[in-house]
Image (tube, rainbow, N blue to C red; front, side):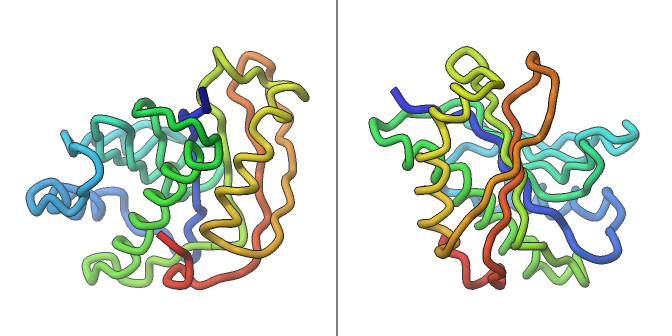
Length: 187
């Protein structure tokens, strides 16, 4: 069975918008059923938590998060559940495609002027700690599927930089990617 519990975070560029600016946008995504491959549930505001998750759009399978944790603000998608395909690449690709699609929607929303993303970097966390330990063997298990998923969405070469974290934390790597506009990414 493939791993599906990934967190992908795409950094934001430039001056950051207030966290409250994302709340009506996420509420509109629920109201208009803009997300069609998951059930949208609610919007949560954790902007008061310093260095915390910020604003979340909670869905049945995962969460879209304007994430300020780990020292950098970005848009993240945390996939928690869903059907695990036999193909490990597809298991990783689903979360990555959802992140890119949400980034395109946010970047194109007139209520969020100047919002853009750094498409040359991606933070990846493997949230399934029962199947993937934060060690060399864990990385060996997910590296191929991650390369395949990122290649399908970005194209080009990807390099990974491990992030030294406590072994009790999820396996975390930073990906360096070829520069693309957000609209050029396949989602």
